[in-house]
Amino acid sequence: MAESNLAVFSQTGVSGILSMVVSLGCIILAWWALQNLKLDVIIRHPQSSQGKMLHVLLAIVLGHFVANFVLDYVGWSQLLRTGF
Image 1 (cartoon, helix red, strand yellow):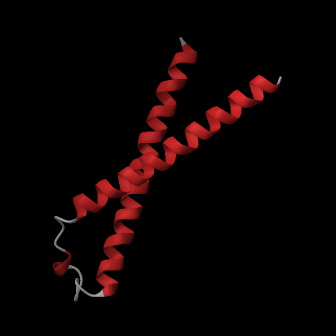
Image 2: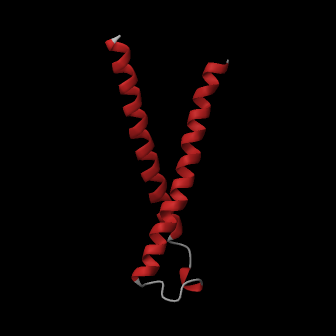
Image 3: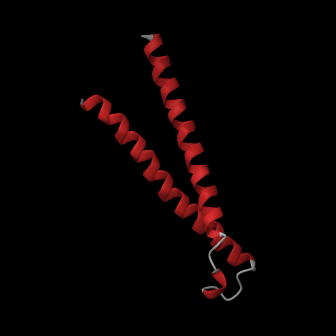
């Protein structure tokens, strides 16, 4: 019984670490991709602190959606093993 609890905790820990790494990686990727976006067309002062904060928030939101997609896709692919 103790070994199965340890395996569940270990699997949960690996899943949590994987989720954090994928989320941070996708946020960094979104930040890199947003560097090419011309915010000066949309924002009055893109170099201000508010403009930079908007850039960071856009990267977090976009990275979060991409990370959720990637993690869902990984979860769905693991579910396929149990179906066949």
